[in-house]
Length: 135
Image 1: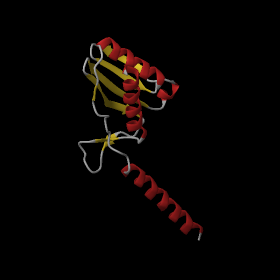
Image 2: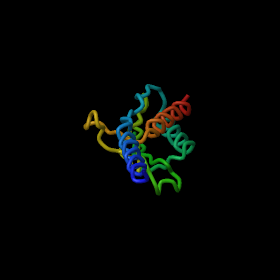
Image 3: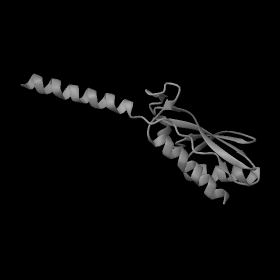
């Protein structure tokens, strides 16, 4: 009886874990935002949004800010990199890579990247905060 319970419990755990792997969502970059602002104002809004959500600026070039999340000690365990490209006509936020967030090819479409469910929320929050900072 004890062996049967142990086997059933182990089987259930394996099924549960394998089910979790299959439920990772694909990366969904937020839609590009068309908004008119000077490049300096755009960059300032990106920087403010990054500070607000505790992103860390990794690299800055004209028209591009590369960010890492989180910008805190939690980055020791996991980290996501995103690019924010901007012009005077708008900006876009795009997932670049991650570590510790189960990123990998999606089961349904191996050309697409699936990742931890919070990644899409973090990208969308960043994009929304940038837009609020411009308006």
